[in-house]
Image (cartoon, rainbow, N blue to C red; front, side, top):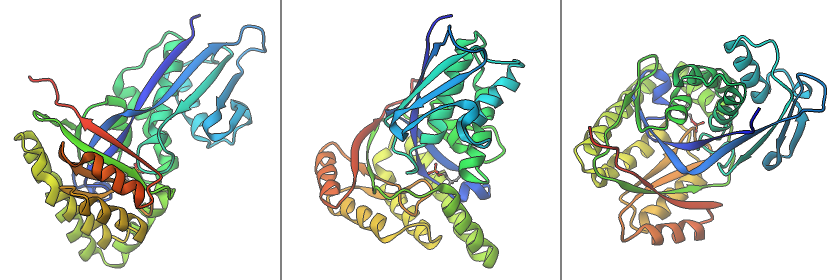
Length: 318
Ligand code: PMV
C-alpha cells in the first residue's frame, strides 16, 4: 500500500459572512497561498486498526482512539469509515501540517478535515467524489461552528470561487480579470461559534433590525459578483467598506480589527473589511499593483501578526 498525500487550500469570505447563515448569498474564494497537508504512512508492524496522528503545529501526537469523541479528527475519520462502509482502516500514521492560521477565518478546520479525508480515502483505494467529501467535512464544521452555512467546506473542497446560498447548489463565479488582496491576521483567535452566537442573540432580540442588515449584506454579495464577473474587480472596494460597516453593526468587529481596516485604507487600499466570523481573525484589503507592498508594510506596522499578498487568478474561460 503506497504512502498517500493530499493538500487543501485555505479560504477567505470576500463578502456576505454571517448573513449567509440566514439565507443571504456570500462569496468565498480558495486561497492557495496557505495549505493544510495530510500524509498517510502504513504501519506494518503494529496492532491492526490503529491510527496514529501527528500534528506538530498544534502539539498533537496521539492515537485516534485516545482523542475525545467529538474531536474534529475523530469525527472526520469515523465519518469516512461509515461512508466507505469499512470495518477498520489499516494501521497507519497520519501526519498533518498546515500553514493556515488557526481560528482566524482562513478555513483551517475545513482544510485539515478535507486533506485528511482525501488522503485516507486515497490510501484505502476509495477516492471520494467532491460532493461526498464536502458533506463529510460539513459534519465536522458543525463542531467548529454550531450552525454552519456550509460555505467553508464547499469552497475548500471544490477549490473554486463560489457564490453560495445556504441549502442551494452553489454557483461558480467567473473571474475574467484577476485581482489582488492583502490578507492580515490580527493574531486574535476567536472561535466562530462565539460570533455566530452573538449574531443569533442580536437577531433574536431585534429580528427586524438584523434581517434588514442581512438583506443589505445580501445585496452587497450580488453587486460584488456582478462587478467581478463584468471584469471590474477593482470597483468592489466601496462594497467591501460597506460590508465592514454592516459587520460592525452586527457587533462582530472589535477595535483591533477596525484599526487594521483603517490602516489598510490609509495606505491606499481600495476597500477593506474583516473576513470570516470576526471578533478577531483576519481582514482583507483590495489592492492595486502600485500599493500592495505599502498596504502590507502598513499592516505589519499596525500590529498584524501575519500579512500576505495573494492574487485571485482569473478562472479559465468557458
Ligand atoms: O469561521 P469562518 O471565519 O470561516 O466564518 C464562517 C462564516 C460565517 O458566516 C460566520 C459562519 C457560516 O457558517 O457561514
